[in-house]
Length: 83
Image 1 (tube, rainbow, N blue to C red):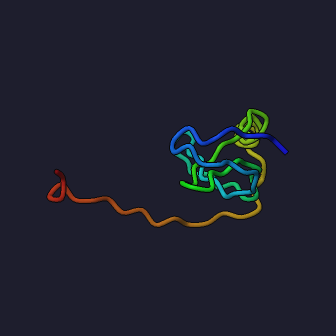
Image 2: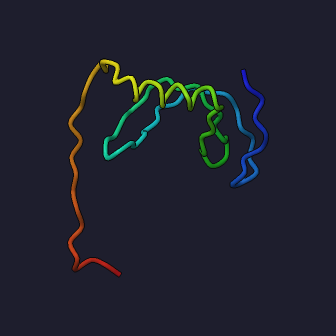
């Protein structure tokens, strides 16, 4: 268990938990489940320790066989809706 300080965004308490994380790398989307992280109890911001971040990078670089692959719908807004 890691002792996290208060949330740097809202000042809320950060507790240890496991989360699902989306990670984008070189145009690819990777999803990691059961990632150990600190989670702010007030705003939901997620914090990783260095060891966990390095493991995520290692797994992507190693191109391990993934347990499953999913299709993700993608939709692009038209230019008419820009501000």
